[in-house]
Image (cartoon, rainbow over all chains, first blue to last red; front, side):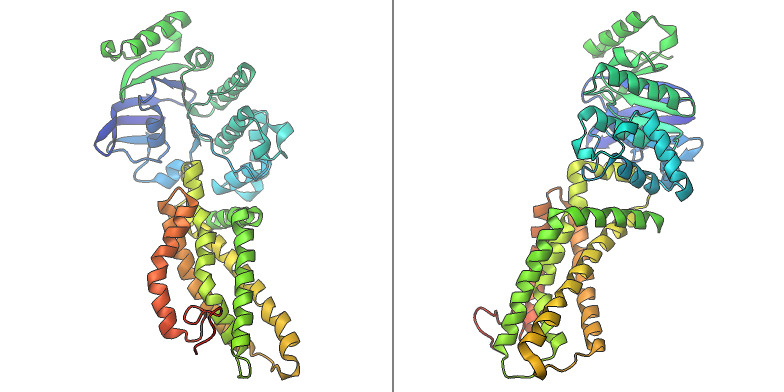
Length: 242
Length: 205
């Protein structure tokens, strides 16, 4: 269980996140959406232990990010929005490096890589140099990296950006499979696509949670309409409890 | 330890294929070889100790080599955003720094090893029967001194690389920081070295 309580964060004097509180249960896939500059990436960086919040706490299965960051990081998978990769390595070499870096036991490395490659549909390009891959494949390499060590929390920043429809569907299938053993938080603007697999939508605006919706409680079109309305008219946004 | 080893292996691999490693190493060996030959020419007729000539030929160029080798360590990771991904892994900052530092030192050790080829190949041809057998202990002591110097330069370079996204800026800053303290030291403690008597102007020792 991920428990985020009263998180605030500022770059210098400029506040980015203001009193963010929510929790995510294992098996949930949360779509975090909002306009540019709403604080989605910053929130994910705080949850990935890359930025230290000014106030509030983040616990994953009782482990505090500030008190035991190494143990916390061992249980998360993170995909950055820019999805940086080492272009000189092949897909398999890169994943081997990452899995070893995450402290996986030597005897399990091969198995983990094969599973991650299979889950991300990368088996046919495992020996291809990353520098030669298309944007979509690179994204899937990042996803395979995030999935590789069976994390308890998956943090995926702008997962669907730049992917075509089949690749989006493939990513959705991979996430649905991963959610069987992990909580997933994915940011993005492609709400229509994310509604195919997410169980909850959190709308972030100006550093605050503007609304939370359970997808099971709403009709798809109605939910999209509500989110669009919130984003079009942010001043009217009211916190909606799921 | 495991994380340090993993990062070290990755960086050594990156060095192996990197333009930023091969070219500086070759350039270093060329200028060092030239300095070595010039020192021999300028001291023609006198008795020279090989380890001294080797050490004094290498020492002036070592800071530049270390600056170029270390400039990419963190600057590149910051520029590409890879640093975020690295720090999201369950590793300590010190593991990351040490892994990268040791990779730069590995490149320096390889370069110093190659630099020993110059006296090994040149001296028998130049000095012939007048060449005495060099002392292994003296060579080892000189190597140790050079390695200690290199570790200082690499440590400084690694630290400065953290502060920049641009690799060239990191290298220039690293060299700029070292130059003011480096040159007076060389003048005082290394008489005969190319910095106090550049070989292109003739030796004043």
